[in-house]
Length: 116
Image 1: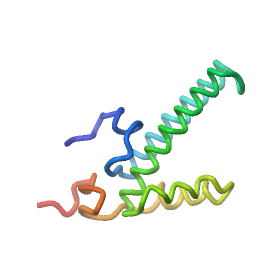
Image 2 (image 1 turned 135 degrees about the horizontal axis):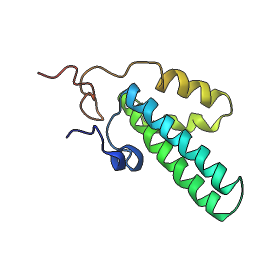
Image 3 (image 1 turned 120 degrees about the vertical axis):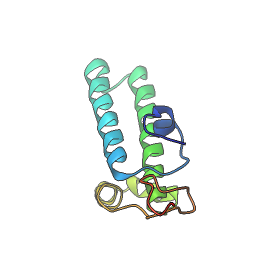
């Protein structure tokens, strides 16, 4: 299935794999949404809390798929809970390192490598 513009899958499902470029696009979209949310609703309140939780869950789904592309369990995302370490882990492991070429236990290569 082509996942080119499937935003629901990108932000609401932990299934499958996502390549670096699409991960960076997803991170940029979530960051922009966070900025707009902060400008519109400030830093406290019920609406801000609910939207913040939804954005965090969307980010988690994105990161899990990127872990899958690196042939790692989504549980690796727990590293994000460690201040500083989590940021640098995500930057390097999810944002800079290449995914597993060809299919792995989480699905086919999103770049189509290793397929005939």
